[in-house]
Image (cartoon, rainbow, N blue to C red; front, side, top):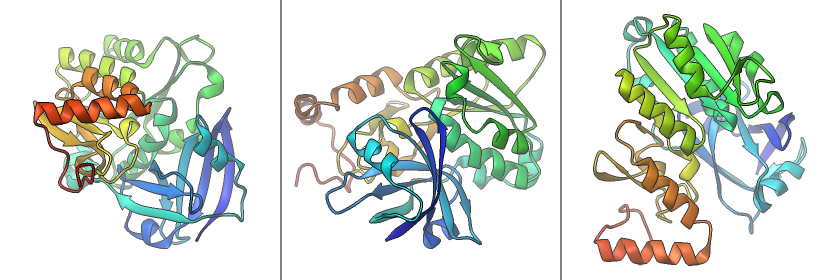
Length: 295
C-alpha cells in the first residue's frame, strides 16, 4: 500500500499528490512514469512523474479528473492509500544521458501545454541541478488552468505564460508565443514540447520549419502502460514504436501525429478498439513483444 502524504488542488479538476513510494523515488528519472491503481478493481492509470524526493521517499503525480477512475482518485485524501504504485517505467529523458558540460552549452526551451506542465517540471528542475537554466513556455486556454507557474520560475531561466484568451501573459497559443520569442531574437538549440497531441503537432510543424530539433512526449496516448494493450503504438520515422516501452519521448519531427490522434480517438470505444486490432492484423503489423493481445 502506498500512502498519500500530500494533496493539493492546482486548478479546476487538476490535482497534485505526493505518494510514499521509496523504490520509485530512489530510482525515478525525469521523463519516466508510474502506473497507479486505487484498489483491486481499479483501472491502471499511467501518470508521468512530476517530481520526487529521494530523502523523503515520495513521488509527486499530477492528474486531471476527466473520467470515472480519475474522478475517484480525486476523492482520495491525505492519509489514504493506493493499492499499486508501479515504476519507474518508460525511458528517461534523452537529456539525462548528456554530460553537464554539454547541457550547459545548450540553449533549451520547454513548451508545456495544460497538464503537460507536470512532466516538464522535473526535467527543468533536473537541468538546473546540472547547471543549465532552460526557458519555458506554459500554455493553457485561460489563466485558471495555468499550473505550477511559481514552481517553474524557481527552476527555469525565464518562464513565459501564454493563454488562448489573453487572460494571462501572452495572448495566443504556445506556437504563437514561440514565434513571438523568435521574432524578438531568442534562439534555441533544442525544444521539448509536452502537452495535448494537437499542440505538439503544431509546435513540431513550426520547429521543423525553423530547423530546431524537437522532442515530444507521447504520454497522452498511453493506457495500459506496459505494451499489453497496443493503444500507444505509433509510427516514428516510418517504424512502429510503443510510447510506454520505447518512449514516452521521441523525435517530434518523425512522429506521425495524425495517425496517433486517429488511434487515440478510436481507442475510446470498444468498437473502435476491435476495429484497430483488425486493421493491425490485416496490415501485418505486430504488437510489441510484451503485448498479450494475440495470446
